[in-house]
Length: 326
Image (cartoon, rainbow, N blue to C red; front, side):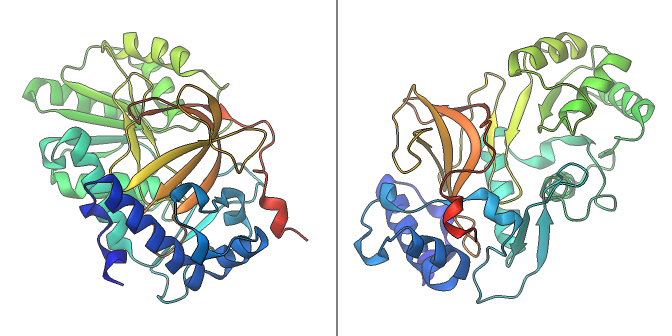
């Protein structure tokens, strides 16, 4: 099925719909976990004619099941960070090139070529977190940048400070990506004007600091870095695509990724722009796993297709997951 190998060529709504329906039928046939869930929902694939009729797999099943199509061997397993003692999600990747292409093309849509930037990271290194999809993404951007000055500084704030000062003297564009708590810690220790700089928070307090709203976070970081906006990345272990916000709290997704918002009290009903509900994600790059994920995030769509992330559901397990428990 050639249509399963070109998610990045989508240009129209009809192309997206056609490819989504084809991938749904492919994954129903090839993914035992997804097929069981669809069957338990009593949905017959041959009757599904629209995207809204496709069942979305509860994301919590990635903690207990291998959500993967069975036709290709696993090249890499990504795992969520989790907290100590917590069960971690696992995502078995059959084609790393899909992830490489997705993250590069998604980045280029928003920021241009990675080789225009020097990437500095307040994240673990690939050696410290070999199963992190975020760290894989950061390293890929560094590789594409080909800047000898890129690097990881989670364990060396003094080194990051020196590198930022050095970059300021050269005038090269700098992209600083960091876990939220690490950006806050660095901003408190080394506030300053660092010249042309994009700061992107990738989420994650990891229990190290109290949770903050986006407004609180940006009100702290913007003056510390002497910049007007803090950019954000929205991605997760269970997906192969990311959405980005340029600092206004509104995320844009690439053409092969789509956000739907479900009713918080009726997870099989969708609501329109301006209303709060659960975030469902279609990620057509996630061909060999599951492209239709019901997340545990609360969000709101805007009429232009952009979306906000408002937090998490208090009940962490998405309704519908109970169909496959017991």
